[in-house]
Image (cartoon, rainbow over all chains, first blue to last red; front, side):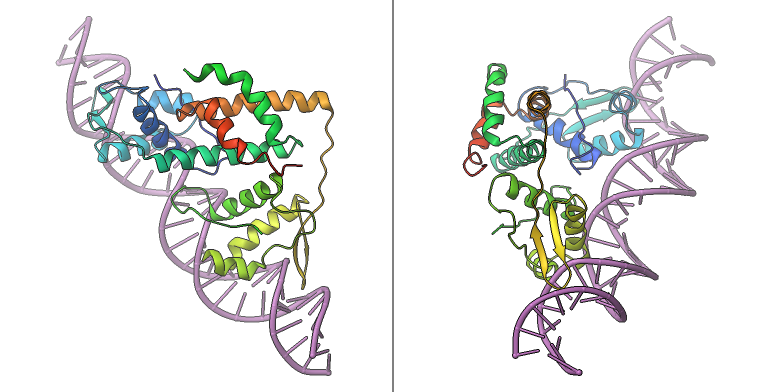
Length: 126
Length: 126
DNA sequence: ACTGGTGTACTATACTTATAGTACAATGTT
DNA sequence: AACATTGTACTATAAGTATAGTACACCAGT
């Protein structure tokens, strides 16, 4: 099951964050072909966004054949193999780190200190 | 000198990308207090965006006392200082790390990868 | 057949973002 | 004093994003 998380401060539209997280979830093997996604209403409530926002995300992925929807039943992971390019992965990593360094810098925390703290989490790499 | 680059596909507004890159440049020691930034017109041409877009970015940073502007002269890196108690700082560090480990995990990025990326920036950070 | 849950389709509104264009104000140099 | 360069302040337009609300269509149970 995917653990959706929206960051309103990132500037990235919600529907795009949802799309990204589903695509990355498929690429990293967190969800498999045939898995059912949360219903549009359930996810809207969970993420505290509008029904239309989730719908927009699902619809775009459905157009790309990444999701398969059955009206009345639900939305499922399609059989298309999603390939997130290493370039895209790298961009995401870079973007996250920049946000991270900026957020920390506001409090006078240096990248070096961040690294030290992060080492405590290294075990969870899976 | 900062090497600005905009990614139109990221979904992040241009003016925000400019803000982020300036802040990131400060956090990682690429620019120092007193350095002059490109003029609003020069940067607008360089990035192929509108004058107003650059202005918006500079203005927001000026409000935050991160930049200092002198009409007729230019825009410069300000000398902001953040005073936070070490206890508060430590708590913030922990909180920020947890947030980012979670945010990264959503995209299949491990703490170890975060550390690797961060190491690129630990050099000049004070 | 009915009911509840699913996705879908619309209208309308508000806010944000980006652009274009114009004009003005402050500074420094000549 | 004149000029070029800087930041600033408007108006107007267009596109994108998010919300609210309503209604409908499809499917699987009972």
